Image 1 (cartoon, one colour):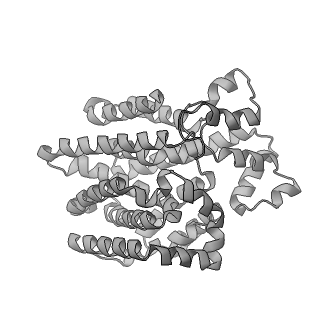
Image 2: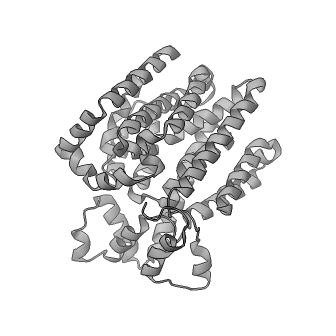
Length: 383
């Protein structure tokens, strides 16, 4: 657990210390360290097992029978064709996704990414890069490039990027309507609050009917069929649903700050209006997933605008009198989320990194790697 807390503390120090925050070398070293820590995980996580089996079947008739998105299948086959080791392929892909995400976070926060980075690390990145739903991750990172075309109101280019992301995960179909945020022009913060309240009430009251609709839909039912049994028992952050009332309240509080200072965000940040609207969509998505956990991973497509807005609020808008209270709140929420994530499952502890094994040219047996965390973790071995 030490290494998780170490990087948490490092990000907090980076965010609090102005000299470190403005030091480009420290910032780049921190980002590189996070990349190595998050993306080079070896026996941690869970999804890599299926991905490794799939990768080793590349180029065979067996791979063709696997139900997997075309884009990912072709992408994996290219690396297999050039004789790349699975872990080289897998880690390189994660590193690219991570660095692109950080690039967009820096872009949206105007270089002021400190507290946004802390929220991203604690609430999202551990799941994205250590548990690592790879196809979902690639699709969500590709989708980041569509934000520009939402902002510029270029639908065909937006559609092209979105359909490219769709080649890696079918869930992109559910977020295609996000382009319509351009048509939404809500001027009063109270309207946002009313809409959130209505959606929350409808989701809670009619959640069983909504679940039945998803299951009965020929497209959506097939899309999520393989997830239903897993989600019924999981404790993953993206799927926690009704059990995360504190997480919901924390997000609602942070969004209330975004609402309070949204005018300043819209006028001072290049994509201020867009990321404010997308933050609202993120909250709506989170609320819907609160009642219908099967939709939890849709948050992957929208979390960066949310954490970017929070970072902008703290650095530029909250008065000095209240800033330290908000910072303390964010630290507490972030640590709580991180701790809950890494102690809810065998997937995070013990932590192992691929680099020492690569340096020593030590190739561990698949079965050993697959069972390592289940055997040695003190936490839930069934989730």
